[in-house]
Amino acid sequence: MHLRTISMEYIDLTSEAAVSETENVLKILEDSPEFKGKEAEQASFKQEMKGFRMLFNRFITTRTQKLDWSKIKPPSGDTIIPFDKLPKVDKEHIKKLASKLCILKLNGGLGTTMGCVGPKSVIEVTDGQNFLDLTIKQIKFLNKEYECQVPLILMNSFNTHEDTLNVVQKYKFNKVDVLTFNQSRYPRVWKETLAPVTQSPSSRLDDWYPPGHGDLYASISNSGILQKLIDQGKEYLFVSNVDNLGATVDWQILAHMEQSGAEYIMEVTDKTRSDVKGGTLIEYEGKVKLLEIAQVPASKVEEFKSIKKFKIFNTNNMWVSLSAIKRVVENNELSEMAVIRNDKSLDGKPIIQLETAAGAAIEFFKKSHGINVPRSRFLPVKSTSDLFLIQSDLYEVKNGCLIMNPKRPFPGPPVIKLGNEFRKVNDYNNRINGIPNIIELDQLTIAGDVVIGTDVTLKGTVIVVANHGSHIDIPPGSILENKVVTGNLRICLLYTSPSPRDS
Image (cartoon, rainbow, N blue to C red; front, side):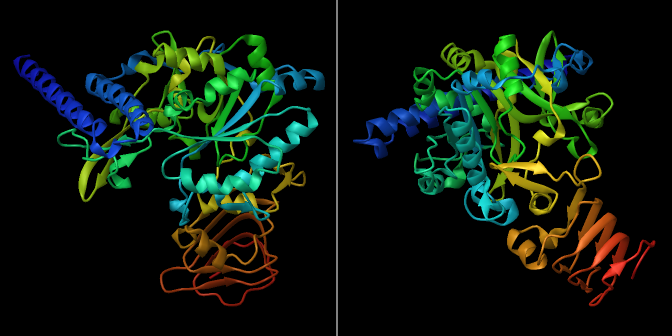
């Protein structure tokens, strides 16, 4: 008991020191001579640092607090509504809903994990079109079909803002209003001292970070766009990741939102073994909350991953009332949002980024709940394995939306696992001369020095592994069904009948 008292006193002392040191650094940054004659820029910077102060102080005061795992419960039946229980909507009702709708894409990520430079949203995904191209086509169709003017809002980060502004110029004749704003830029802090890394408002980009998509609510308000949309008579905001090609407007969800009076709806879908790390909705002390894996005690991670206990996960598709966003921001109701600690390194030294998730705001909105949607509404492109799937004959594009090929004999897409040799888009393009026909594919694994020719057909379970020092060519016109191919292979039959193994 005595040891614990000393420990808590020490934590309190170090917390006070950290808050004091951080406050000193922030004041120096805010009063920097760099802002001389730049009052508007200085005011914007102070607004951002106000947000960082709140986040940092919340981290300091809650960092020793732990969730009581015994109080965590899967959401009740009223908390998650099945999609197939939603009422149908006629065209006249859709027109009314469309006139009140805005679409926002979270556009802060770079394409670096796929070896690309610039915003991820400009990576070509299908038929020469990138994520933004497809989104613009979707909205252009909605505006024409329902005689409305649904705007597209892009929340950029400082990493993507300038490039995005250049890219969206090509859409100015598409009859779609495109609005952009930059999310906050917060200073990273040293893990050891908790002091900000930066010493100048204009220091290198690596000293700063975008604080997660939970920053959405404050940033859209600070930008002035929130009030602009409200003044235009808009009421609803559909939010999703820009790389989720399944996140299209669904009028049944919006009609349910209107009918139920919900201020916030989160789309969730059934968890599979590939989604075990995804955040999930829970009930905790009578409230609906989002639980992220970063918040889970190490001893409970496997339980968190359990498909039996936590059956659904957050797709990050969200429907939010604009007037409710205004209220919770102005009343500072989001000040208690859960802080996510993200440990990284900078110059070989450990640092911390403090972030929030947009879904964590669900507990602060009235009548908020989840809708269990079909898996087709969660189609993210996080890797070249995902890209392979999207570019295949499994999907076709209609009005900017991806539709699964009706010839697919099985529900859901196959599992695709491409090795490190395919991780970067350039390598992927060089190794795959034509995306194979995969209508009847269940699972594909490719690893090592492998090249795929044109007009290849894959069926069932196909595994192609070139061990170290080996090379495998799958020539044009090949058909592989339930095959395991290993070793060196420069020539193979055009059709390989099912057998346990080729080598």
